[in-house]
Length: 110
Image (tube, rainbow, N blue to C red; front, side, top):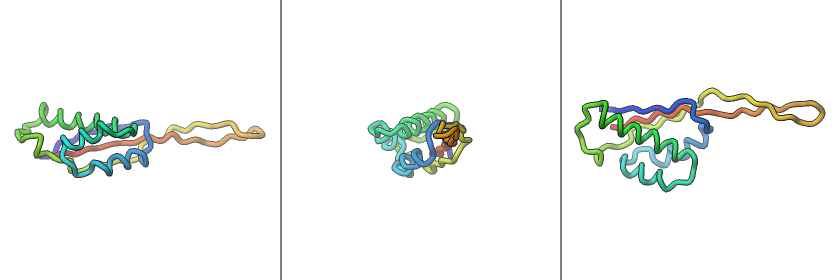
């Protein structure tokens, strides 16, 4: 049985979040949580929080009778969310656009 957890509109670019997601994809849940705890990236905290939510969903909301040591991460999907558009003043009255990117994160364990 697959258990899903999502985090939408996270204020980190998908490129930065995918680097952390690639390092824990396919690992055991307990091993992934412990390794994410020692990473310094902002994305590690976000993925760890979403993965902990998926574990809590498995324990509380579903009839998931198996031991958590046998559960692994099936898929981690990082998609691009809506970008916040800002402007920076430049010389001679011009302006440059700044896109502050967001991400959609989806974790499936089973």
